[in-house]
Image (tube, rainbow, N blue to C red; front, side, top):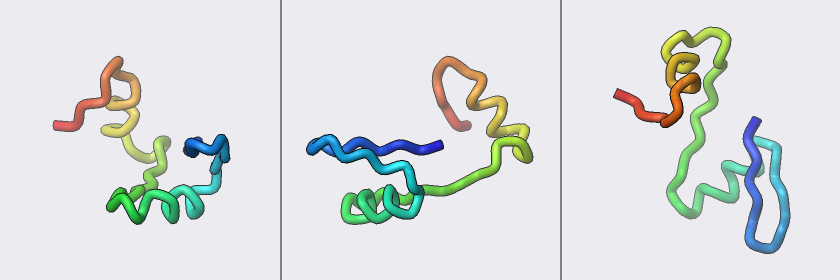
Length: 52
């Protein structure tokens, strides 16, 4: 679940709205299903998220 909190206190939890807010900053969101991705499960189990 993604949550974006803006400076004015507005919270966005809908991925489409979050992507729209971040688009002007040239930030793209890629959605991946955790259950189907062993590599992603391994990354999320780490203390620090580092992709090789």
